[in-house]
Image (cartoon, rainbow, N blue to C red; front, side):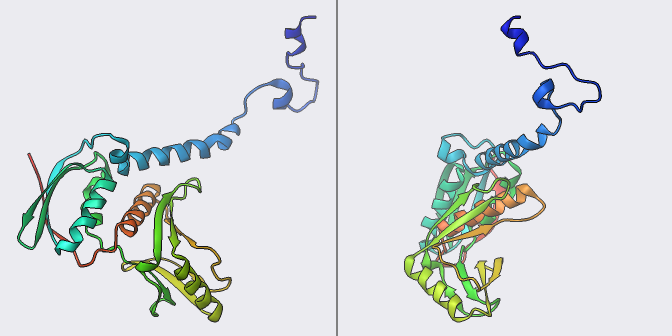
Length: 245
């Protein structure tokens, strides 16, 4: 008998239950095994399209708009850094009374409609004692903030604290084991947790959780951007937004 015949699937015996290992037929259940892989790939592609065009050298292909931004001169550098991180195309700035104008090409994605709000967000990261207690760690305690997809389908931001800030947080939690802490970015409550057990690491994971996967992605990337390039030293507002022909 040939080697081909030796490797052929065995004939089913009467009353036997079909099995993939013997009949070689694919099973519909395999789809559920590989589904997370496709989901993770889809999320990663969405992230690249939304906010990665600049770093990868692609050209934003959406509308070109002019924003009139009212803010102090000290905030301009950080807002410009956010423009670069977003990958907004061909930015052109000009001085205007009370701030500056910014002309950019937006990415051709649904998120383009709200990117100007992220540009001027204060980006004040702080960890409080309880919900409305004093700050335990402020923005000066942040070393880095990085967007991550290390958990498939659950976008998050890994905030690395300065060593002294981490020690301060850990001691506070040890001294108030019956209480809780809350983590905020501006007036947005990101999460709250009990102090027991205390944080023992420098890294704090900020998870964007909700039913809308795309909204979670946008929130997480926004957090990473405004914490990395923030907080702004003063308030900033977009006084006008107009499409440039």
